[in-house]
Image 1 (cartoon, rainbow, N blue to C red):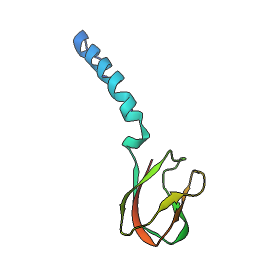
Image 2: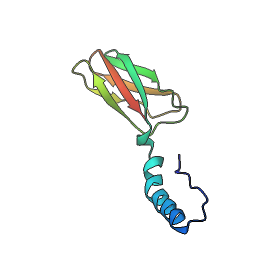
Image 3: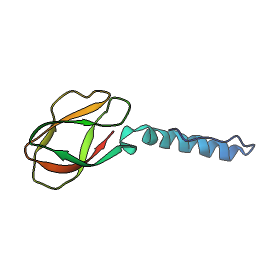
Image 4: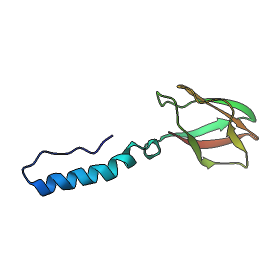
Length: 98
C-alpha cells in the first residue's frame, strides 16, 4: 500500500505530500507492518503443518502467545500455502505470519 497524493494548485502541499510519501512508503511496503494473525493454533509434539492463509509465500513469522514452555521452529522451507513448524511439547500458540 502506497501513500496516495492529491493534485492541488498549492505547490507547498504537493511538495509536502511528495516528502511524506518518500519517507512513509518504505515503511508501508514492509511486510511486517501487515501480518496475518493466526490464533489458537494447537501444536503437538513433533511436526505440525499449518495453513497460513496469506495467498503468497511468507517472508517470516513469530509467536505472539503460547500457553506452554516449548521450543518451536520452522522445519520446512516457506511455501505459498502452509507453514511447517516443529514443537518440542504440546501447546496452543498464536502466530503472526508475514
